[in-house]
Image (cartoon, rainbow over all chains, first blue to last red):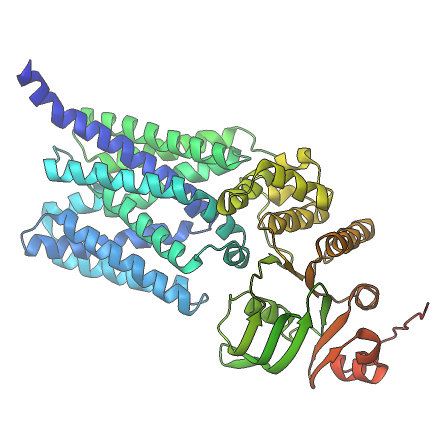
Length: 262
Length: 231
C-alpha cells in the first residue's frame, strides 16, 4: 500500500500542480485580457530564457533563474509604466526581444528546446511544492484583489478615490503575472506560456457578460486545455507545451463557430 | 468654513506647465463650475485635486473630506465582461457598503436595478453616467467632483442629471465641483465659477466673474451667450 502511495504521490503532485497552475493562468489572464495586456504577455515570458541560461551555467535549478528574471522584468515594466505610458510597449518589446536573443545564446542544445517548449518528465519535490504554493498565491491574490482590480481597470482615478493604492496594486498584479509565467515554464516553456494566460481568457471574453462568467469560463478552459494537452503529449512522448496550446487554440477556434454575445 | 483651499497650484505634464499659480477657496456645500477652452487644464485640475497627479503648491481639503469622482466619458469596450453589479459590488466591497446603501445610491440617481445586469460597455451614456455617480455615492462622499458629466448625453438625460445633482446638493449638503462646457449650467447651478483660460484665470460668483469681456479673454473669441436675468 505504502509503495503504491509513494509511486502515486509524484503523479498526484504533478496533476495537482498542473491543475492549479492552469487555474492561476485562467484567473490572471482574465484581468490581463480585460486590461488590454494581451501583447505584453508573450514578450514578458521571453525574459525567463536568459534566467534559465544563467541558472544552467551556475548549475542551479533553471526554474529559480527563470523566476528571478521574470520578477525583475515585472518590476521593470512597472517602473517604466509609471514614468510614461507611451513608451511602455516599445520598451517591453525591445527589452524582451533582446532577452530572448541573449538567452538563446547562453542556453543551448536540449536545455534550450526544453526551456522554449516545456520539458516532459517528473518534477522534483521542491519544484512541485513551489508550483503548488505559487499557484495558490496567484489564485488567492486575484480572488482577494478582484474588487480593486475591477475598479482600477475601469478607471485608475476612480480607484484612487476609492482608496485603492493603484501603484501598489499594479506592481502586485505584474508580479503575480510574472509568477504565473514562471509556474507554467516547466509545462509550456518560454515561448508558449503567455498563450495559456491569454487564449482561455480571450475565449471567455467572447461569451461572458459579467465577471463571474469571465473568470469561470477562463479557468475551466485553461484547466481542460492543460489536462488534455498534457495527456496527449504523454502518449506522443513529446514536450507538453505545444499540445496544451494547440488544445487551447482549438477550443478558441471552435468558439468562433458560435455567435458571440450581443 | 472652506471645503477646499488651493494655493499657488502648479501642474506640469511632460514638461509643459498646464496649470500655474492657481489660488482659490471654496465654501462647504457650494457648487463650483470649472470652465475653459479645450486644453486649458480642467481635467488636469480635477485629477490633481483627487491626488492622481503630482503638483506644486498646496491643495487642502477640510478635515473629514471624502471625495467622490465621476470622470469624463470613459472609453469602455463594448464587450468588456463587467456589468453594473460587478462594478457597484466592487465599490461596496472596498468601502464596506451595505445592500441598503447600494439601493439608496441607485435611488438617488434614478437607476433601476434591472439596468445593472447590462455590461457597462453596452449602457447608454446617461445610464453609465448615473452608474458612475451611484458608484461615487457608495463611498459616502461629502465632496463630488464631476468631469463634464453631461458630455455625450441626450437632452432628457442631461435634465435628469441636473436634477440628480441638485437633489444631492440639497439633501446631503454636498460640495460639488463640476467641469462644464455649458454656460447655462454654470449660471443655473454654480455658486462659483473658476475659469481657466489662455490668458490667466478668474474666480467668483458667475454673474460677477463672467463678463462678456472676460469670456472673450478666456475663449479667445466672442461668445454669443446672454444671461437671462430672472431676478
